Image 1 (spheres, rainbow, N blue to C red):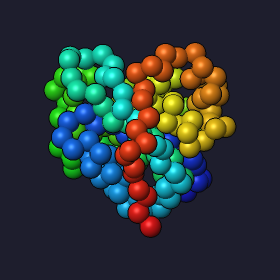
Image 2 (cartoon, rainbow, N blue to C red):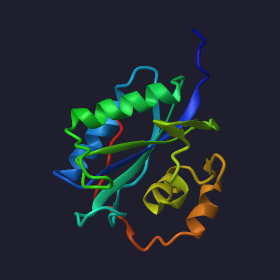
Image 3 (cartoon, rainbow, N blue to C red):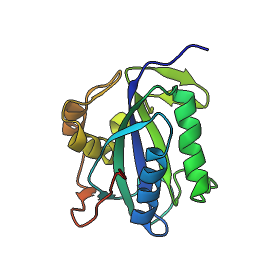
Length: 172
């Protein structure tokens, strides 16, 4: 088995059901507990309008940046396991959810498989991903799409509201 190099990993976190902040914190805690994954930063929390899908409550969103030697497949499996641990139900596309953990980028890797796309195929269009990411990495680049700052400049960010009254904590 070939050892994976350490890469920067970007994950997007979202919740619009239940105690949204507690659910996001649970995802941060679970990712921090992932062996060989070092959490580098967690963005401020944002409240965002839902995109697509049925009528539903607003989301809380954040971005977590980490480093580790995990393959994109292993990271996807971990993200899905964390969602399942928080009772994520997938019955309506773009429907409400207790927790969403999306794999946004893994270094500069590009993966295009039926059940795994890296970078996330819609990340460059999602202000609720890019705005928080920019908060924790001003020089961030989305592979194949360019600088995150440039991508944000071309988006409507009016539905993305920073919540300075809410904090996520990286456990030590």
